[in-house]
Length: 67
Length: 159
Image 1 (cartoon, rainbow over the protein chains, first blue to last red):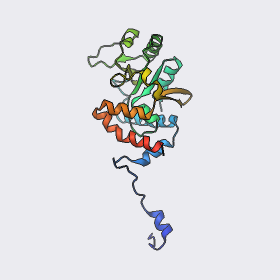
Image 2 (spheres, chains in turn brown, orange):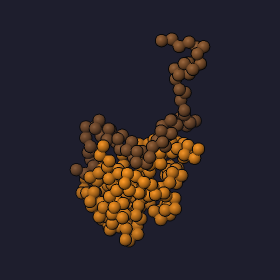
Image 3 (tube, each protein chain N blue to C red):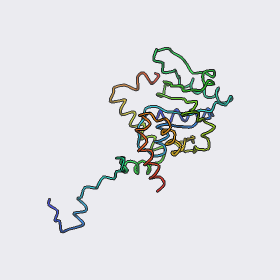
Image 4 (cartoon, rainbow over the protein chains, first blue to last red):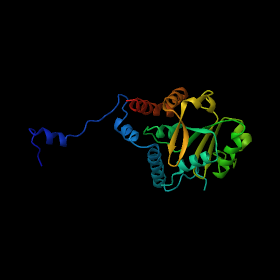
């Protein structure tokens, strides 16, 4: 579907949001998202990341985790 | 999800160990989107704290991550010597630190830490500004790499 450029509302809806980066290149959207979470949820995000990497490696931190 | 970070912290809290979370997990708890695979804690060297810490580490089946593969367990005597104790536990890697940088200890950083509620317990966490200073002071590549995210998180938190 073609969006008429004369329709500011619809043009705005389809526009790609600009990146929100600090001068250092840090993505502020990620920080704002993390700040919107509780500490428990933030820790869950980290744990989910670690678990996912370990699953991709096909192990569970072998060598670092005592079984 | 196995919640191993939370499980280790809960055990230390339940065993009344005086410690604070530092490093990458502290950064995450403060809202910084960084990743880490190990949990770093700074412990109090007080005489009464060491047996509690040693017992908790025993429950976690902790062994030193020894490149030579020796099976060395942390105990009160080793913990009393201070320094860094880099351990492998039943709940993942755990770095038990006697100090941060050049002589920042649990006692000197106590006033720069906050109690934070995580799941069903409260844990002491080094505050974000102090964490930034510690990383700046350490100056290692891995610390410097994390600094832009930490500084921006600190800035956005104050908005």
